[in-house]
Image 1 (spheres, rainbow, N blue to C red):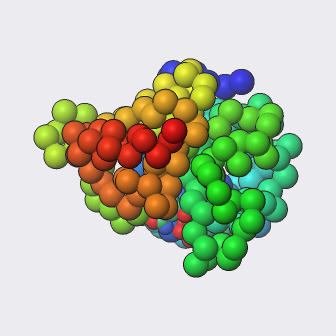
Image 2 (cartoon, rainbow, N blue to C red):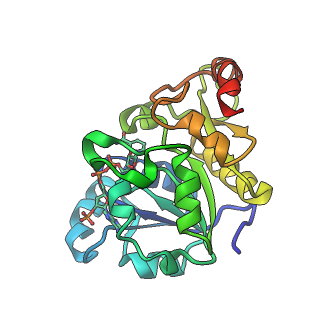
Image 3 (tube, rainbow, N blue to C red):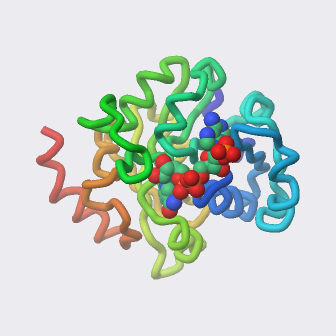
Amino acid sequence: MSTTATPGRLAVLGAGHVGPVIARLAIKAGYPVAIATSGDPEDIALITELVIPGAQPRWASDAVADADIVVLAIPLHRFLELDPGLLSGKLVVDAMNYWRASDGVLEAFEDGASSEIVARRLAGSTVVKALNHIGYHELEERARPAGVPDRRAAGVAGDDPVAVATIAGLVDAIGYDPVRLGSLRAGRMLQPGGPVFGVAATPPEFERAVRADAGSLA
Ligand SMILES: NC(=O)c1ccc[n+]([C@@H]2O[C@H](COP(=O)([O-])OP(=O)(O)OC[C@H]3O[C@@H](n4cnc5c(N)ncnc54)[C@H](OP(=O)(O)O)[C@@H]3O)[C@@H](O)[C@H]2O)c1
């Protein structure tokens, strides 16, 4: 399992709204980044060169095979088409949300923490929820180096402490104060309906919102 604390290679699956932003921020932070859709990398070669300079467009399977960290930046309903075997043995960042308006009704995701359901489907992977709760425009605009006073917080939720540490390192490197939530189940605080969804809060605001909501995890 690739859960190193040093910057590793990223495969970003999804080249829509949020995938390119995550890719750009990660490149800026020094991570080698490959980006993929469900199709031919040739189809995104030009746009990648223009909007994500430095990222390598690849077939998803090739990008994943060489990656230390795989970021799922695809709509949740498309995730259900993804072969879990592709991600086996990988550290996976679930940046997805269950959003009925675009996903339709997905019965499996109607209750609970969506990342727990994602993790059950990806039983051979280590799943950490992160980078899902800040809109893509804001994610890029609010990114700041460590120590800058108006730096914002971003949540990281997972059950594997080493994996959580690795993704907290990624979140920190791309411009946010990582706030570790205790478990993948606690990742529901980051999802739609949760107290920090759609919010780029300061670390104290984030901690307060999460503490106030902690009762809902009981
Ligand atoms: N938009 C935001 O501000 C934001 C912020 C944080 C998190 N999120 C979450 O991130 C996810 C993606 O949102 P989005 O707005 O970026 O979606 P989007 O604009 O619709 O883009 C989705 C991308 O995923 C690709 N894709 C679909 N199936 C794939 C597969 N099996 N393998 C590789 N790539 C695949 C699509 O390309 P092809 O169809 O060509 O394969 C497309 O490039 C959602 O769950 C959303 O809730 C969004």
